[in-house]
Amino acid sequence: MTGDGDRFEIERIVDKRYRNDRLEYLIKWRGYPDSQNTWEPSSNVEGEQESELLAEYEISHKQQQQKMLNSGPRSAINNFSPNKRRNEEVNNNNTMKKRPSGGISGLQPSNTSSGFDRGFEAEKVLGATDSAGELMLLVKWRHSDEADLVPARIVNAKCPALVIQFYEQHSFWTRLPKVNQMVDL
Image (cartoon, rainbow, N blue to C red; front, side, top):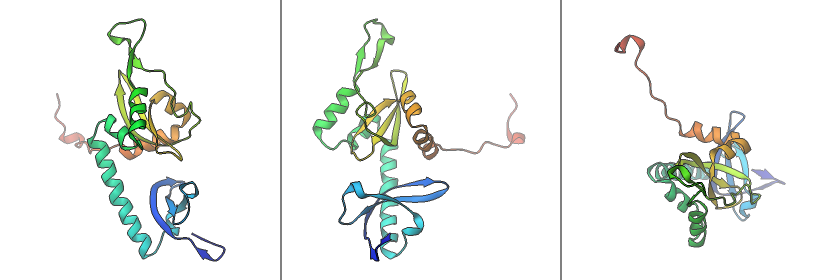
């Protein structure tokens, strides 16, 4: 990215996304705080140094995705928590409590505030899990290292595009055999 005749130096690539069928990268600029990170079209990320940074990002991104797929939801929460105190808060926020009505089906997530309630803006859906029969999504909050498990129905209503993006990135398709190769039952 250039501005006022100066060339800004890329420190690292933080994330990537597709917007209007165009690949964009979230850039951390050297000498600037994270709040100054910007989404840049891939055409602005060219050159030898940028190619190395892109390769580093892709390797790191693949390792992170593999780690998320191989670990349970508790591990994913802990990976995005900045310290032990926050880990304890996340664990406490998502503990199961009995409903007064009782019974085995009386388990539900505790009624603690999610990032939405605290005024945070969702940045990305990191994972999904089942909690007492309810689909929960692990949501990372913009301008924060925090992530919370939030009921999917709430995330679907508040930021459907992020949910769609998550499922698009995590859907795996297999080819079905041709009709003439299928066995009739």
